[in-house]
Image (cartoon, rainbow, N blue to C red; front, side, top):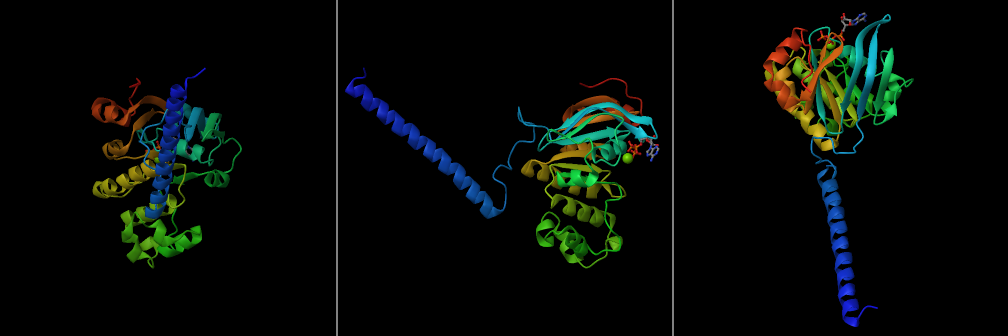
Length: 288
Ligand SMILES: Nc1ncnc2c1ncn2[C@@H]1O[C@H](COP(=O)(O)OP(=O)(O)OP(=O)(O)O)[C@@H](O)[C@H]1O
Ligand SMILES: [Mg+2]
C-alpha cells in the first residue's frame, strides 16, 4: 500500500507529465498553424537523408529494359528516398533516358520491378503514374512552343502566380509564347509547371541541355530546396556532373546499361578517376 506522502508525490508527477504532454502538443499545433500562415509545410524541414524506416519513393529492383527485345539496361537496382536528390550518371548511350522512360511507363520492362512509394507500377499507365505523383521532365522539356507561359498554367489547371513562386522572372513573360523563350526561361517554365504539382518523385532528364553552366548552377539549388522542403524524391540525369553532385545526396553510375558504382555524392565528386572512366564508359568496379 502506498503511504499518503507517496500518493501525493505520484499525483504531482502525473500532473507534471500531463502538463508536459499538453505543452508539447500545443507547441506542435502552434508550429503547424505558424507554418500554414507563412505558406510552408510544417513537416517540410526534414533532413535530406532517408530516415530509418521511411518508405523509398522510388525502388527499382533488378530492372531490365530495352528496345525490340534487345536489353539496354540490365538488372538495375536503385532507390530514391523522400527528400533525397539522387544523380543517375553515365556516358552517352549508357541507358539513363531508357531507365527514366521505363519508370514513367513509356517503356515496358523486360524484367524486374518499379515501385512508387511501395506500390508496384506493373500495368499502370503513364497517365495513372503521373496521377500517383510521378513527374518526368524529358530532355525536350515537355512544353508547347505555340502556347504562352500563362496558357501552360491554364492548361495544367494551376494558379500561375503560386506556381512561379520560385521563378519570379516568369511573371513578366506570361504573354510570351514558349517557343520564343530562351533555353533558361523554357527550363524555368518546365520546372515551375512540374513543381506546382508537388510530385512524390521528380525525374529530370538533361535539364541543362543547351544551357550555360551558370544558369544550371542557379536552377539546381531550386530543385534541392524543393526536395528538402516538400519531401520530394528527385532522380537527376545531368551532364554537368559536378554541378549535379553539388546538390545530390547520392549518385549511381551506369556503364553500358549496368550499375558500375554507387556512392554518396561527396565521395563520387572526389573520385575524379571513377567519374572520368564512367563518362568514357570504362567503369568496372563499384565505389560501394
Ligand atoms: N528508340 C530506340 N530504339 C532502339 N534503341 C534505342 C532507342 N532509344 C535509345 N536506344 C539505344 O539505347 C541505348 C541507351 O540510350 P539512352 O538514350 O538510354 O542513353 P543515355 O544514357 O540517356 O545517353 P545520353 O547521355 O546520350 O542521353 C543507346 O545505345 C541507344 O542507341
Ligand atoms: Mg539521355
